[in-house]
Structure formats: C-alpha cells, structure tokens
Length: 248
Length: 221
Image 1: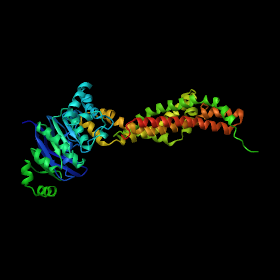
Image 2: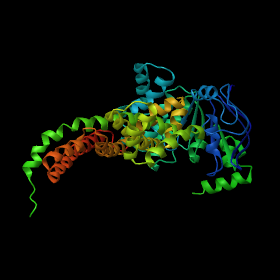
Image 3: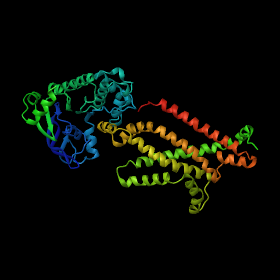
Image 4: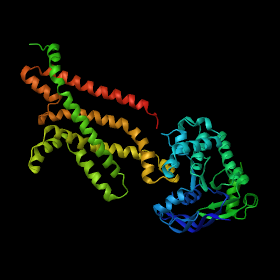
C-alpha cells in the first residue's frame, strides 16, 4: 500500500517551546486517521505541517512522494503538495466576497486553468454531493454554519485532492449542525478518501477511523484501532484524557 | 452702521466663482488618482516582511504625512524650479502636492485594509494551491478594498478641501476666483459664503455617491 504521508523524526518549536517532539507517522492511501488530544497538545499543528501552513525545524516530511523541507520548504515543494492536499478549517474560511459556486470554482480555474464551464459543472456536482445544490448562488454569510462547512469541504474536493486534512471541522458549529458535516465526512471516508482528522468527536472517531492517534504535549503517546485506543488504552495519559472526554 | 448680508452680491459672484470649479476638480481628482496608485504601491510595500523593503514606505509616509501640505506645494512650486532649472506650472504643482500628500494617507488606508482581513483567508487560498500573489489579488485585495471605501472617501473630501490652499500659487481654483472677485467688489463676506456653499455642494455630492456605492457592495464583508 502506498504511503501518502511520511513523517520521520519531525520536531517543531515556537521559539523555545517544543511543540512537536520526534513525530514518526505514516498514513496509507485510503486510510482515515483521527488525531485526538487536549487543546495545546500540538494536534492541529501536526496536520498544518502536512500542507506547509506551519513549518517544522528538523526531521523529514514526504507527502504523496513530494518532499517538504524543514523551515518552510520552497515554493516548488509547497505548490506541488498543496495541489494534492485539501484542507478544511475550524472557522470554514470561505471567501465572503464570492458566491458559494465561485468559492468552489476559484482554485480549479486559477491553479489548474480549468475552463469556467468545467469548473462550474464541477462546483454544482460537488454541491449536490454535499447536499446543498440549491445554495450555489448565495453568499457564504447567507448560509448556516453547517452549510458553510459543507461548502468548504466541496471547495477542497474541487481540486481532486489525494489527501484531505480536517482541522476541528465541527468545533465552531452549533450542536444541531455537527451531524450534517460528519455525514459528509463519513461518506467521503466510505468512498476511500485518505483523511487526517483532528476532532473532539469521539463517536465519529470510533466509527470512521481506521486508526486513532493520541497526542500529548507534542508526542504521539498511543495509537491503534479505535476499539483498542478507546476501550483498552495502554498509556495512563490516554486513559486520563479519555476518562475526561468520555465521562459526559 | 449695521452690516447687511447682500444676497444679490453672493448670487452675482457665482458665475465667476464657478469658473474655478474645473480647476478644483482637476487638481483634486487628478491628484487623488495618482495618490491612489502611490498609496497602493507604498501601502503594499509597508506590508513587506523585509525591513529593507518597508523603510522607503515608512520614510515616504512619515515625510508627507508629517509636513503641512501648504509647505509641500510651496516647496514644489518655488523650490523645485531652482533645482531643475525650469518653472513648474502651478496646476502641475497642485496635482503633485495632492498626489504626494494623499498618497501618504492612502498608503496607511491600504495597509490597514489589508491587515484587517483574517489570516484564515490567506491560509484557505494557499491550502487550495494558489500562489501568494494569486491569493492576494483574488482573495485578500477584493475584501480589503471594500473595507477601504469609507476611509478613501474621507481622504477624497480632505484633498478636495486642501486644493483651496493652492490659491497661494495662483491656480485659478475656487478660492482664488473668490479672491479676485472680492478685489473688485469688496463683498468679502458674501463671496466667501458663496465659495463655502460651492465646496459643500462638491463634498456632499461625493458623500452621497460614496454612501450609494457602499450600500451596493455586499455590506458586511
């Protein structure tokens, strides 16, 4: 099986603060990896390194065969990787000055020189797929949070990524809208998309993940099948974390 | 003797004063157009990561924001000819002064507008594979520009009023026309009143146009 992400002995610092410590992690094609951990543990930073939104100081990172050097890499490396890696953010980060349809059409037209007609067809097809085909002409501010996040997923999918990164995609949503976003992600996983997901949705992790990774203070302290990590955690830090988040 | 406001004198002066309006508008909008280009140029330069790139912008902004526009135009009109060895047309001097002066303020408007856009917008653009330049011009700039409209309108009004100072270098703009007219009729109060009303008509029309323009935009972007 091909490895989409290979991290070897990666370290990252914010000044003197050691955020990621000796990270060794590989993600196989088609695998869904859910990363859990307390806030400030470095889990978001970890997936933001994958598409170069964060730079790392030492170690090695290869994404879909493209290396990304430490300290920010170079433009060639970054654009090669970003064309193949989609990202969904906690705050959606839709473009407020563009309609929903145009949000999705922008990158294919600018980056891949897709024709306007083709980009539009793709946008409408993707909106259909995430269940909001009727909102194509609206502006993001006219949509609910759940709808906005589904547009953000469609926008990332328009670039036909080989890997999707989700950075707490449901953390900014009202509770009643979390389900509709998770449904789209579940569907995506079922279709075989490779995914790295940072989330606090333990139910989703248990159900969808092929592998759950627990990060504590910048280190991977435990990983395995969801049932193994959730039902029989080996590390006492994982046990403590899970007893806190699963208690209620 | 009691002062009587002579409405007829004010009204009579208007056809003469109006001859100054084309100059007022030409200097204002000619200067502002160049000032806008300077503002984008130096505003973007001041956002550069490298200190070496930022300092020309900082120097330009501080110098032209920190000295009176009257001194600037006197320097251009009376001072520069000594260096270049040729006289400078007063109209050109006026446009240059408005351009350089408004450019300094507009640089700050541009910088503030761009900085006000959330970092997440840049991250979204980059994560989709857009280059930094593409991200800036298709995502950041359109949003920043919309936020810049009110302060740009403000600057336009300030610059229109600043052109009144150029009566000192003999440009036949509104105030200068008033001064010449008063020299013959001695009706200072009435004529300056008429001058003030004409400025108000110009600035109010601009305010209304801007408000319309703002409302037509998407509002809260």
